[in-house]
Length: 291
Image (cartoon, rainbow, N blue to C red; front, top):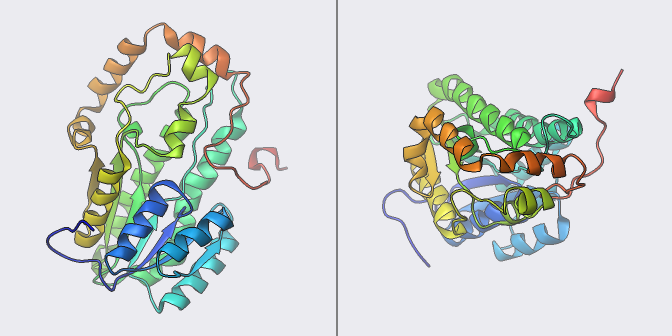
């Protein structure tokens, strides 16, 4: 078992959303192995049960983070089982390609429902419990706030919104002593990345382009562990993301030049390709269709 120097997560009560797979599941396992008391929520019951068992039979619940009433109910139940709460990791997120012109607008709606409203609902439900001197909220943004790739407009918009929510929450919780952190990751070796870059539009139109390459999940999870232990404001992985964030306009210009004319072909394919979300989603009413 690897370790980190400095503050420990041992004994801290930590709630993780989107904990069935990927970064959420790996983080839960690592934190539990280092003595944290974790509680998990997510969409895939069988996977959630497996992760919970690996975390010492941690409490868990099925929960659609885009359903506010469900989030309120589930968070209350899990906090009660933990006997309090020190840390919220708002990790649940999805992605799906969408052409801005000619694409399916419901992709944007679903993405914002999970990645933005889901974070806001989790904060609303868990916020009163972490608003104390040792409290911490960690939200997941992305390097896509600095570099917007074609077909990733929905995801990039959600990441930018999460960064804004974190900044606001940091101001609002400052007087309580609680802190707020934001992660900015590049492509990490998870199913979200493999599925997101595994579409025909990306393969054919952009030659499977991942401009930065895919980084291993281990260092990203270790960075989150350190951030939680030290209640850090910013978390990056890989390390070079910290160099890109201050140079957002230049980074975006570089991406546009590197991709060039290939974008047109990718967009053409994406308009008709029925690519899935990176995590299967439950049926929800579409707000755009309501009267």
